[in-house]
Amino acid sequence: MRIFRYIDEIARVGSIRKAAESLFITPSALDRRVQDLEEELGAELFERHARGMRLTAAGEIFVHHVRAQRADFERVRSEIENLKGLRKGTVSVAASQAMAFTVLPEVMNRFRQVNPGVSFMVKICDHASVVKALREFETDLGVVYNIPKSADIAIQFEVEQRLCAVMAEKHPLAHANTVKMRDCLRYPLALPDSTLGGRILLENYFAHSSLKPKIVLESNSFEMLRNFVRSNDAVTFQIQIGAELDQVKDGLIARHIEDRSLARQSLSVAQLKGRPLPLPALRFMSMLRDALTGK
Image 1: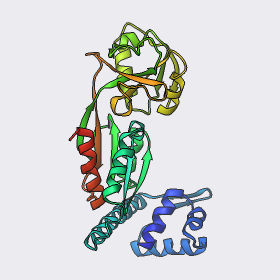
Image 2 (image 1 turned 120 degrees about the vertical axis):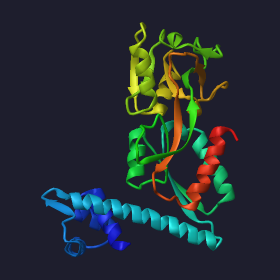
Image 3 (image 1 turned 30 degrees about the horizontal axis):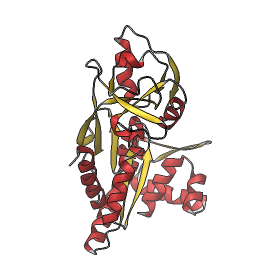
Image 4 (image 1 turned 30 degrees about the vertical axis):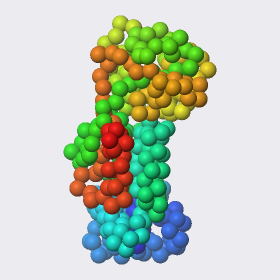
């Protein structure tokens, strides 16, 4: 496993020197280990340049194998720990920003009450980065809205999500139980940028609407968007799982958008197809399913 770790780290940072620093080994010793492995395989794994190291085609194949083996090793280790009754392990999750506000931390806390020896590694990112993290064995589970369909990504379950308008508690639209998109378009808009899944739905709606949006802010941060609309009459948008409906929180309130022409998409929980998950990840996914589906 040590040489696997060496190769993976060089591929990640693109440099023998930087990898050696993080691995606590001398650059010359690390380079020697790589050359020995290349001789054994009969192929170069890296192209060596003045600016660093870049994977060859053979290197890409080998690194994919390395990451698969390391991920499977973690699964085997968690199963052995489970047999010993220690209930240890780590669950890694890559999730969209909407999950960071309430649902994900709440389910993690409930899970750790039952499994106190389990820790979490959570990466909050856009939907493309979630897929990348799954493919590169950086995460066990991906939880993302409007995930691109792909043959190597296995969707474990999906939950349909409505789009919500988020606004200041004293906004003129705040008194309504639901709002129409045309109502929102009367006000300045603070929109998620193209890296966030909800933007695709909004762009499709705008393209077929006679009303043109007045966009005053675009951001890849829901926190930024929420903080901005708190003190003015602008409206932003978020899927329902990340919005506080029917209650005021931190000066904000959210309302469902009722519009037949506004398509609905699903929040998906996914894993890399063919990758066996460690037991803690499987158990966490089961608890997450119950939370998201209301069971």
